[in-house]
Amino acid sequence: MTDTATGTAPSRTAATRAMPSALKLGLSRGAVETKMFFREKDAVVFTFSFPIILLMLFGSIFAGPLEGSGVTVSQLYTAGLIGAGVMGAGFQSLGIGIAGDRDDGTLKRLAGTPMPRSAYFIGKIINVLVIAFLEVVILLAIGVLMYDLDLPSQVSSWVTFAWVFLLGVTGAALLGTAVSSLPRSAKSAAAVISMPFVVLQFISGVFIPFTQMPEWLINIASVFPLKWMCQGFRAVFLGADGASLELTKSYELDRVALILAAWVIGGLVLCLTTFRWKGRRDG
Image (cartoon, rainbow, N blue to C red; front, top):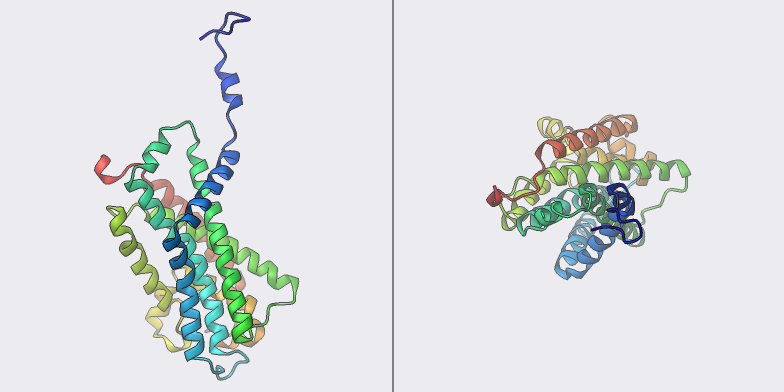
């Protein structure tokens, strides 16, 4: 096709310049992903209600003070389930969602469009950030209103919360993206991805304090990011009173940052080496 004024074909450079940036497309994709998520009522109810129900059940049953500390069991569960909620939004929900997109052909169709592939992942990360943030707000509200959890008053504590949240949700999202390639179909995705996540919660200090666990389980949990996310959130919301419940009597925030950052890098490597745009049946 030629330009009527000049009689020449439009240059490819001009066409490229007319394309929106990957970031802009990713932001638009994020809005679409978020709208699609909230339209799926059953997914919304399950995603948000599961940690809330667990917190209210465990927090009500085991409500007494923890010996040798100034915190209650309910407050300990609140901090732990905030970590599990953030991990669940990135690892479980994202992994299952991408597996579904691959199985129904959404990924294959998107890969064949002019949209940069990075825009798809930007959209997914935005969706995860929204879900994780809302999860934290809801769980904190329950902890404050029902279990006398005190929100930190120091800016440094909220800075700690910010980097633990960002490193944690980023690492979880990358791992969720990588693990989405394991299920053979969308039907098996929930079982394949949810089962290891549930086990990880029980060995990572979400429901059972580390002081009550055998050493070999502690060593296994220490390899994975959830243990360190929960430890970072306990540092923020339990403060000095809760430090006595840690194995080293310290929150080891420098180690928390190091290991979470290592999982971000490791998750990125796993994504780059294992992610598939087509389902197994597509060859």
